[in-house]
Image 1 (tube, rainbow, N blue to C red):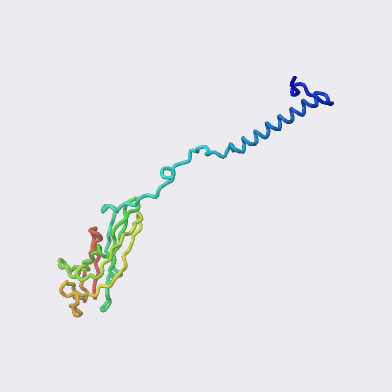
Image 2 (image 1 turned 30 degrees about the vertical axis):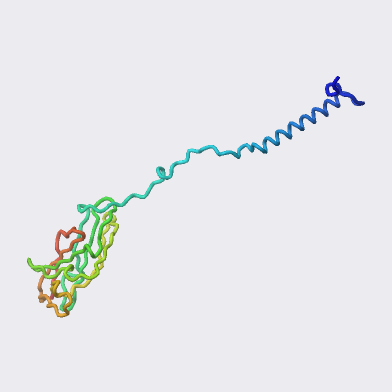
Length: 198
């Protein structure tokens, strides 16, 4: 008969059964530990979470579009309405976005045109002898006027053929009235700016 089923020894059979039970439990515990080490529960690929797609959930910056001509006003500007003898008028222009959203507009000196007239006669144009025109794009905020950098007009007539001359004739003063018209990238001022040379 097997000694496993019928323990042999000086101790009662209950003692041997307890010992065998402890040995079996120990073996089972070792097996479980080895399995846990090999399998490592929780170390596998984590469960997928429904994370929002940044390209769709995050608010992307709004694209600023080009200004519509109907949403832009251009205004001729001088630093005074009357100039004493020897004082050169300073010319500039003001651009205003009359729309409801910001927009981009070409505002460089390459697209700015200043024209001075007297009656029906064109006296001077910024394009006749312009040097080094520069391109520029400006973001115009709604209702915020933007003024160009003022520059002086030397009170002379302009003509492409006399650009290098240092003796261009001065225009008539002594209370003569002149008008400044401006345009930016084809958008012209609705009204001219009148000024007087004394």
